[in-house]
Image (cartoon, rainbow, N blue to C red; front, side):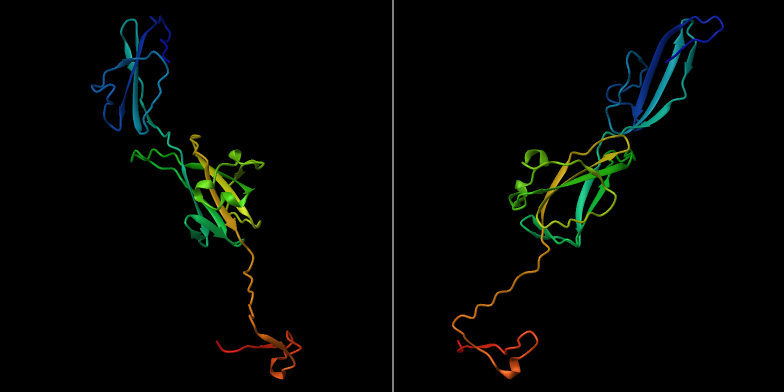
Length: 231
């Protein structure tokens, strides 16, 4: 915006501007010509923009503005999920215990190389219990909206997550940066298994007996044992 101050203003004749992209004139204006300002300006490239502008009145007096530097960032963050300790994984299918921590770490990438990444603001997550089939293959995992489950709201990530429910879990998460650039929601399905394995012994054709003194214990007060033949 430009105005011609008192006293006796002749009025504004033109407003012009130009910018450099990473210290070079952009392809759209390779010679660095002054361009007439006609509408709001939008920088479409992620990088460093050095913006210059000037105002001319009707008697051709010109004043150049001080110029500004703009770092443009339209790239969303990337969130990485990990387990501590590591999950047990077979063909992409993951199992964890209730003692495992789920850790979400976000970074704001800088594809320009000119430090134009503004930084991560917040990370959000939600967890939904889903049928086992969603965890049985990586390709079966999908956003909650495509399942038959009731989807809750997203939570602000404030530290490692612990899941106590033994089931197939659908974890969804995303991050936003300080400019509001929002990552697409990521999904991860995994099993939570907190039960110890069960051991069954097959005695085959063994003959049960009891009363053997050497086998009597607190857990075996009858001194039970089995007779078997060598194989």
